[in-house]
Amino acid sequence: MTDTIKSTMNLLKFLHWLGVLMLVCGLGIYMLTQWSLEISGMLLISSLIGLGLVLMSPYPVVLFIQWAKRQDELSKD
View 1 (cartoon, rainbow, N blue to C red):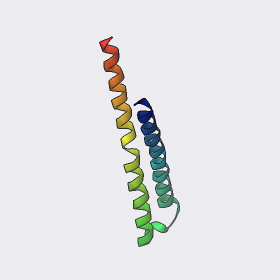
View 2: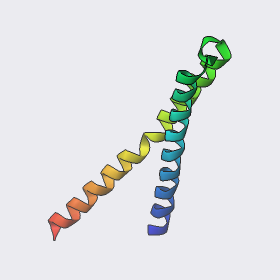
View 3: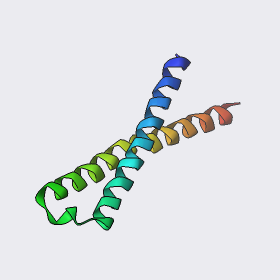
View 4: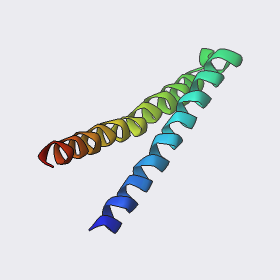
C-alpha cells in the first residue's frame, strides 16, 4: 500500500515539475520571441502554458491532503 502511494507521489512530483517547465517555456517563448504574432506560435504558447498549469495543479492538493491526514493522526494520539 505504501509503495503504491510513494510511486503515485513520485509520479505527481515529476508531473508537477514537468508542468513548471512547460509553463516557463511557454512564458519564455511568449516574452522573448515573435512567435506569438503567428497562429502556430499562439497555439504552441497557449498549449504549453495551459498543459503546464494542468499538470502542476494536482500535486499541491495531494500535499495538503497528506498534511491534513498527518495532523489528524497526531491529534488522535
